[in-house]
Image: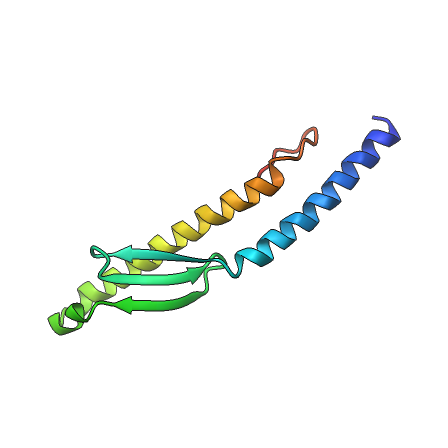
Length: 108
């Protein structure tokens, strides 16, 4: 491989790394929701998996079924995590999809 081609690949990789880092920083601020129990429980978290809010419909509190409530909160957190991962994957694919470096399979 000629030095010029290698130099171009290195520059592409460095530029991509900077774009990936910016995208990851932005994703830390993006909020997604997860729901369970027909939207009776809602969890809001960032794409970095930081939980920001948990909303529980008051009717669940009156029911008194602690185990069901715990299961619904867990399900809503899992749903939010899947949504965060999906958004993160899509955003990073937008950044890395333009790279064409031989032998390197992107996006990750």
